[in-house]
Amino acid sequence: MKESLITQSDTPQKKAGENIKIAREVIVKLPKTDLHVHLGGSMRLETLIYLAGKDGVNLPSYTVQGLREKVFRETYNSLEEYLKCFVHLGAVMQKPENLTRIAYELAIDNQNEGVRYIEVRFAPQRYAGGEMDLSQVIDAVNNGLSRAKLEFNSSEVVVSGAEPPFDYGIIACAMRCFTKHSSRYFSDIFSVHSNSPPDRIFGLASLELAGAVVKARRRRGIPAVAIDIAGREKGYPPIHHREAYMLAHRNFLNRTVHAGEAYGPESIFQAITELGADRIGHGTSLFNPEAISDSSIKDRQRYVDDLVRFIADRRVTIEVCLTSNMQTAPELHHLEDHPFRMMMDNRLSCTICTDNRTVSRTTVTDEVYKAVNAFNLSLNQLKNLIAYGFKRSFFPHTYSEKRAYVKQCMEYFEKVVADSIR
Image (cartoon, one colour):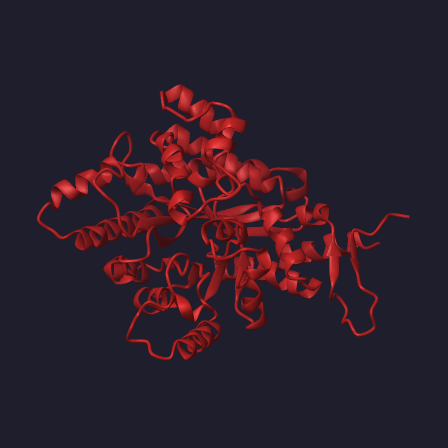
C-alpha cells in the first residue's frame, strides 16, 4: 500500500484538515504562484558567473560556493546589506540577450517546482541607457518568459489537459530614490533635469516608466500587468510617485507597492491611499505600533487596528516573503515571530512569495513548506493561501479566462492532495 504523504492528527477535537503534516514532495507537485519575485535577485549563480566572465564583470568569486560565502549568505544584518547583492547581479543585466536568458531560466526554475503562474518584477531603468531603451528592456525580459511558456505549454501533460498550463505577467518597478550613479538612464535624467529637486526627478522617472509600460502592453501585446515602487522607504514617501500611479490607473494597469518592509504601518496606509495599491509587497510592520514614526498619530494601537480593518475590508493582498523578511528584519528572531500568523488570524488576503530566490536562497516550495510547518496551517488554510495567489494575481487575460484558469489549477490541487493520501 502506498504510504500517505499527507497526515493529520486523529485528535477528536481537531476539525478535518487541521494539524496536518505534509511532505515537501507533495508541495513541489501542488500548483503554486509567485506574485513577488525579482528578476535580478533570482538569477542562477552559474549564469551570473558565466555572464560576468563573458562581459568582463568583476565578481568577488567565480565559484558558486565562493559567491555564497562572500555575497549571497544565509543571513544579513539589514535590508541595506541585503540589497548590496544586487550590485553584482545588475552588472550583468545590461544586455538584451542576458536579460532574455535570465528571464527564461527563472521561468524554467519555477516550472520545475510546480509553480504555474509568476509575476516577474524588475526595474527597467536600471538596465536602460546603454544598449537598450525602456521598451527594449521589457521586450528582452518578455522574450525569455514567453519562450519558456511556449515550451512548457506544448508538453503532453498540458496539451492533454492533465495539468494546468504556465503563465506569467510582468511588473515594472520604479525606484523611490536613486542617484546619478545608479545607472546610465538615471544619470541622464539628472543631467536633463538639473534644476529640479531630487524628489521631483524621482517622480518624473516613475511617470516615464509608467508610460513605457502602458505603451508596451497596448502596442505590442506584452503581458505588462502592473507597476511597483521599490527601494528605501524612510524619507521617500509614495506621494512623489502619485502622478505615475494615476497614469497607470487611467490606463487599467494594476498597482502594487513595496511598503511596510523597512518603515512603519503609515507607509502601508500611504501606499493604499496615495497610490491606490491593489497589493502590498511585504507589509511586515503592519501589526507593529512601535514602528510608527509619524508623531501626529497619538493612539498607535488604534491606528494599527484601523489599518488592519481597512486592508481586510478592501481585500488588499499582502505579498508575504518569509525568508527575505527574516534576513532583513533583525527584530524577527524566529520564523514564528513573523506577522504572517496575525495576518492569517485577521483573515487578510495573503499570498506566499520568494522575493529573491538567489539572494534569499529559497524557492516557492521552501516558502510554502515553512509556512505550513511554522504556523501549523490546516489543509483548508493551505488551499485558501494557494487559491489567493491565483485569484489575486494580475492575470493578463480576460476575467472569464482567469476564472477558468483558477478553477483548473485548484482542481489540480485537489487531485495532488487526493493522490497523496491514498
